[in-house]
Amino acid sequence: MEGPPQLPPELWVYVFSYLSTEEKHTVRSCCRHLKKLIDHPSLWRDYTVVMSELRRYTYGFWHMLNYRKLTRVAVRHLRRKEWRRLVKFLPSLTAIVFVDGGRQYKEKYMDNLARFPNLRDLGVRNATWDEALLGQSLTDHLRERLTHLSVCNVRLPSTAEFIKTVSQLVNLRYLLFHQQSEGYGLDTVRPVPRSDFHTMMLKLKKLNHLSWGMKGEPPEPLPDDYLSPPDPDQPGVSSYGGPLLTSLELVDYPETILPDNALKSLTSLRSLAIRYRYIREGIECRLRSWLSPLRQLESLTIIGGNSLATYTTTIPPSVTRLTLRVAITLKDMDSIAPKVPGLEHLDIEQNRSSGSLCRRIPMLFPQLKTLRIRFFRREPEKDLLSLHKLRHLVQLELLVERSFILRDYLNGHPWPSPCVQELINELRELSENRITVITTMRQRNLLRECDCLWEGD
Image (cartoon, rainbow, N blue to C red; front, side):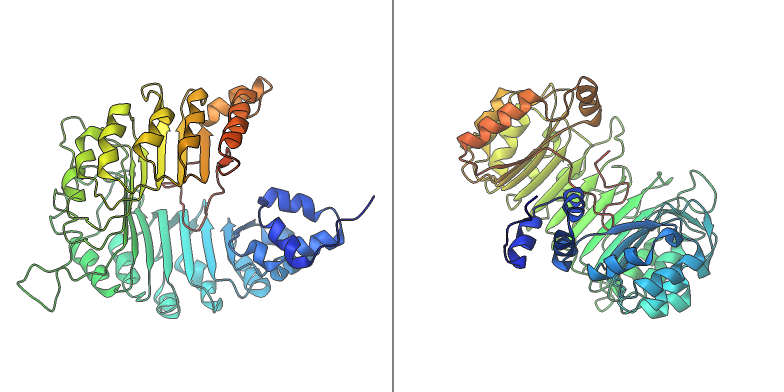
């Protein structure tokens, strides 16, 4: 068998950069030459390796990780002693996310994190702590080093004390905190007290992104100025003193918790995501008033909630990226289009009530560069070919619900089905191969996407 063509290593690495992780591992098994090329650090720069039971890994495995210069790991079910092994073999880690603990943990469990001198990014998911998650000694080590912190679905002994600890991490730029109930109560949800939240926001001056969530509904609404800490240098004056947030994400916050003017002081926002868990009947939609002051908004994501008709008129014209996970009709699209004349990225769902969206999209949003459509209980139809009229479109994602894929697979037709693949091929021809069509769910970013945010199966 002939070996691979004699090309410069740089060119091979460039070609391999287009492969998925699974495809890279397949190529790696071909020969030693390709194995060395595939392990080039530039191909694994943004890769997060998932690890558990560290004792089963060989020295060769650790050598491979070091050769690739991997700096990001997600660890599962680690015993306290196994942290020492991680420190020994991967001392230069910059990002660690601890997922699926399944046990109750003490404060000292995380102490070994102080031994990673380059640690900047920390995540903790799905666990229970009997004592403080971040002890004072560990907090002192991470005070000026940590820039990203995400904590989701973690049962803490005291949420307020945890927030006071977070307030000491003065260089945080990214904070994700999706609150779980305290102690061992199933429905006991106590929101972070207004005073503690304000103190945190006043101290975290470098914070850019805030993802704030709550699993459960508190008995009383939050104060009007909950998200707007006053400037302590101007007492008596209604002025915002918190960080200049550019990105805000509210997760599982029902309309009854936040008032109409909740976002009035966050005029610096460039990105806003609202993820509803449910909507109560008879409650007025507050998105209209939330969106009104956000004149610099560039990215808007709405997951669930009220019908589009209740707030489409207040979508800022500055929005260039729009994600909608709500029931959508042609009438809704007609009302949205004049509001966002410069829209370049659109992510929507199509169901039986949506009509022929693909046929209308080129007329309504001619500036689109990327388009993502999730189909429910149906496959793409022939009107998909109308998308070639989008002269600026370079990427199209076509996704279907998992049950649809399984049904086709059991019938001997994996997704995309032969009919859909024929449409995709024809679309490529019409666009002269300008449009890249993607039919698989992208890989999950374990550092940024907890279970609350991930939309995959």
